[in-house]
Length: 324
Image (cartoon, rainbow, N blue to C red; front, side, top):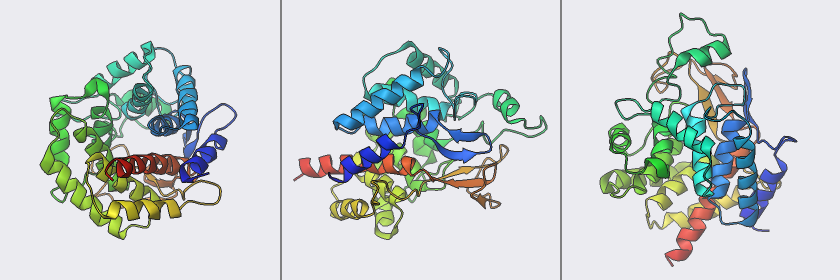
């Protein structure tokens, strides 16, 4: 088996008895819906029979996990959010599946678009406040704020392609060096990959923004030993159609990081800012391994990282073959 097939077999064996992938065990419990939707959407983009079977299976599971028009959330008991819902919709789009619940998901996403063009993970703080038993005096300006990676995820959907407000927000949120930051993620390559994918898929991709992102991604490829970061950086180059000499060597480096069980080391780090924190980049009181707000959680199950790597390897392999 090649690297992709070994990784797929690892993911096939990592689901629990109920058919979920679990990850990032917070005080509210581990994620099942969000992690599974993300992994499924990565697999749905890989032209391999097992990847497609796993993607269809998890979509069926997600479509049966909630009432119609409810959207999806971190796990099945948590109120729905725009981030998770966008990944379920992306999974359905990649599999070319139409369903009333997916249409309901689009409606929820529209409700989470702010006047600035940014998408908030939560638009109403009260349901998640009640679920987490957080005092009424605690502001939710952060969790209900402008979230670049969520905006990019929504902008990349077929249903929102060409939306001028989403695109203008993404362009305004790019750092002059070329990257984007994420509210829920420590790694800038993740948000940048999503933003580049969204912008490159538009009817008129913005060349300057994409070129700045490519230049920044090349600098990350040259220095990182983190497989999640490297996979995202490779994704940036491929989505931007950048024919760089480093892409092939970076792909080989990423393949060489694979473990004996088919996974890659779990180097995706989810961060949980306190609900009132609007700029997590300026926040300093993080607790590595913490399961509550202020926590930074590693991908202990290795599934989130592995799914990201597999998709980037598939993209790179196809792109390099077509450009030879």
